[in-house]
Each structure stands twice: as structure tokens, then as C-alpha cells.
Length: 318
Length: 241
Ligand SMILES: Nc1ncnc2c1ncn2[C@@H]1O[C@H](COP(=O)(O)OP(=O)(O)O)[C@@H](O)[C@H]1O
Ligand SMILES: [Mg+2]
Image 1: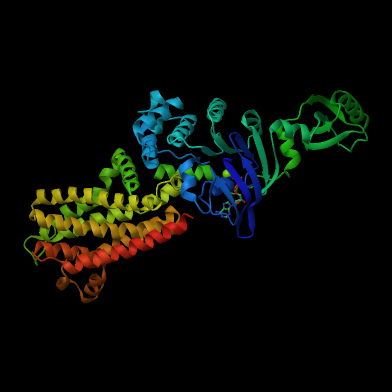
Image 2 (image 1 turned 120 degrees about the vertical axis):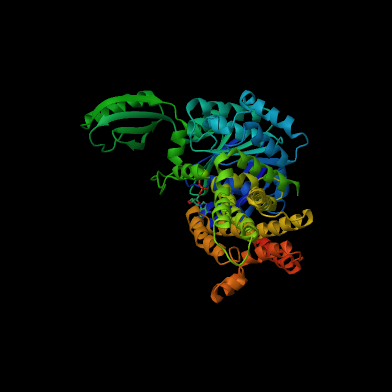
């Protein structure tokens, strides 16, 4: 039995198709759903965690349909939403014991201590969560999620807003959980993190899953090596064969090419010959970023207002 | 539903940690009791404190419910609700826990006010009547906190809720029988006061004081609470699918 089986999952909000005809099968791995803001990642997770009802299609988690057996699904999963929410006025331990009781685990205090220790929060367990750093709060949420030994863990942007060390730690824990047999469904828009941690990634754009494979396979399939040239002046195309422009950002031009080493020199020469002032050029392996940019239409940042700030404001009032 | 009590416990723990909140909710009713109950020159009764105490107790419950209505909305806005909804515990227990917490908190605050009234010279009811008084307050609290929780869930943002709150709270109190008996009111006020659910609860407690068991009050409040609770559950289910 596969941990997560998604069959034609679709969600529309009015005329907007937030998730369209998604098919996926995920088992005993870290699956990363990657996509820009508004591409449908959270909507997907909310359907899989039985919080949102799909418009059409179905998904089963641990063999139970999210449509017909949502309670059984909830028994087997844990969900850590994108927006961090821990009770700041409670201690770390109180936060976790509360969840343990809600999950109905037999010995909530022992289970809570175990989960806290696992998340390296044992020595701070009796401090108010108010005093925790962002990374600690995220780990506290993981401890809450782990307290009933779920089979599948859903994490929505678990590293968003954390510093580098905090992110690394979260990913190490996630990898550790997978190594102990858990299936982890995680969303992120940080490509480097997905590349580092995920066994398989799906790339979603405007609700449509446009790719789904291991990071290595995606990189190998998508592009050859990358040539990055910084040059002043107007780029008017090149007739060198086997070289293709894949991106332009200010005075930085990105090309993909088969034998990038040789092509790089030829290309730099050609651009200089065409009147551009070449300042530098470099050749590198493709990253997941390149895969992503080649698959996903670039789009403007459209966040209308600063939701994070709005929430911070509310939190102070609550 | 044992999970109701886990949600209740969480809210109580959070409440007692917020020191100022614990006290601030008591300031209003205490001020009424002291400045109006003791200081107002009243002719229709020789112990105005005894007369006004039921009104102030109900006022305390009213304040607690109005203040508590936004709690569930905050759980939603701050992102707790999605976590709770993804858990196997029955979802309705989130709502029941909240309504129960608001009501219990109101009862704790009412107790403080009651003790204060006794210190100031109000007369104690016998234990049986006291229990019945608490039952009236409890049912009234369930009724009102269900209403306010539902309103907050429907309005979905704090500013609208605060506005609704200030529109409702003062008129509801002043058009009740809290401060004077019906025969002392102008006719138009008495007409409104008789329809006001707040007077309903207050009159019930006054009847208890006078040694009458207010069966109709109990029945009316319980029926009202049951209806409102059902609506509340319906709105909650719709808001969480
Ligand atoms: N409750 C909702 N009502 C209407 N539109 C929604 C709702 N939730 C999400 N959307 C829209 O669906 C799209 C996908 O959103 P979301 O899944 O949150 O994206 P992501 O998590 O990838 O940033 C967005 O365009 C968003 O505005
Ligand atoms: Mg999202």
C-alpha cells in the first residue's frame, strides 16, 4: 500500500483552478512539491490533510480516501501548516502534551518528552514558547506533529522565514524521519533545499504538475551545462550551434550548451565580436533552479499586502 | 468528547498566564457594584446592592461572552485551526471547548464579583439557591458565547467584531432590568427591557432571591441556548469544510 496516492485531484475556487488534475504516487520518501507563490502547493496539502474538499478527483493516504474516510486519514498523519502557530504563553512541554492528549496517545507526558528530546528541545521544554527562536518554534511544531507517531507527515514550507542554520537543522530532522520509515510530503520554493533533501520533487505551476522525478534526473533531462556570461551592451542573438539562451537578468546572460567549456570561449568571443563588452563568463552544472526556470513561466511577485506583518500585528492583540 | 476538555484546559492555561487580562475583565463590573450599587441615592428599595447584584453578575457574564467571542476567530486567523482540523479528535469539540471556556471563565469572574458584593454588604443566598443562580448564569453564558462565537466566525475579522461588540454591549445592558425594576422605568424602556434576554436572566436570579423557582426562565434560556448552539455548530461546520 502506497502512503499517498493522488488521482486526478482538482480544486477550483470559482473560475480559478488552484490545482488541476494532479496524479502522484508517493511512498517512503521525502517528496518535495515545488512551485512559486500561488501555484497551488498549500491547496494541495490542505486537500491531502482533509481540511479542504477537492472539487473533483480523489486521494488516498495510508489506504484511506480523503473523501470517504477523512477521520482514518487524520489518524495516520500530521500536518504542520505554513504559518507558524504555537501557544506562546504555554511552555514547550505544555504545547506538546496538549497535542498528545488530543491525539489520544496513551501516555501523553512520556510521549511528549520523547518528541521534545528528538527535536533537541529537552533542555528548554519548561520555558515559555514565547522565548523560543523561529527555528525552535518550528521544531516545537515538529515535536507536536510527531507525538502520535504518524505514518505520513505533511510540511508546508517548513523553512520559510528561518535563518540558514535553522533551515539546515530542520532538513536534517526531516531526513532523519524519512530514514526511520516515515513518508514526508513537503512544499517549498527554495530549490537548493529541495535539491539537497528531497528524494523526488514535483514542480507545480498555476496548479498544474509540470514535472515529477528525482532532482538528479530532472537536472540531467532538462538542460546541459550552463554558461553564464556577464556582458554590457545589447544582446542580438548568436549563430553558434548548440547554444541556447535560457535566461537574461540585467547584464547577465544564461545559456545552455552541450560542451559548455569550449562553447563558452566561442560564445564569449562571438559576443565581443558583436560589440558587447564581456566582463566575465563561467560554466557550471545545472541546478534545480535552472530546471525550475525552464519549466515555470516567470512571473511577477503579486503579494498584495504583507500577510506576515498582518499576522504579527494580530498576534500582539490576541 | 474528552477532547473538549483538552481544548478547555489549553484556554485556561493561556488565560491565567495573561495576568492583566485576568484582572481587566473584572474592573467594569466591580466599578458598577461600588460606584452605582453603593453610591446611587435610590428610593424604591432600602438595599439597592441586593437589587443590583444579580444585574452585575449577569453583566459580568455578558462582558465575558462578548470578550470571548473572538477567541475562535483568533485561533483561525493565527493558524491554530488548520492544525486542529487535521487531527482525529472530533472537530466540533473545538467549538464546544471554546464555548465552555468562555462560560466557565465568566463564572469564575462572576464568583469574584459575588464575593465582592458580599464584602460590600449584599446578602448571601442559601447554598441551594446559589447553585441555581450559577445554573442560570451558566445557561446564559452558553447562550451568549455561542451567539458571539458564531458572529465572530461569520464576520471573520477582528475590527468588524469589535465594532459589532460595541454596538451591542451597552444597549443590551442599559435596556435590561439590571439597574431598576420595570415599574420604575419609562414605558418604552420597560417594553424593550421585557424582550431583552439579559433581563430574562436577571429576573430569574431575582426570583430566586425572592424564593420563587423561575421555571420559565430555566426553560426559556435552555431552549434558547440549544437553538443557538445548533446554529453555532452548523456555521462552524460550514466554515471549516
Ligand atoms: N480559499 C480560497 N479562496 C479563493 N482562492 C484561493 C483560496 N485559497 C487559495 N486560493 C488561490 O489559489 C491559488 C493557489 O494558492 P495556494 O495553494 O495557497 O498557493 P501556494 O501555497 O503555492 O503559494 C492562489 O491563486 C490563491 O489565491
Ligand atoms: Mg502556500
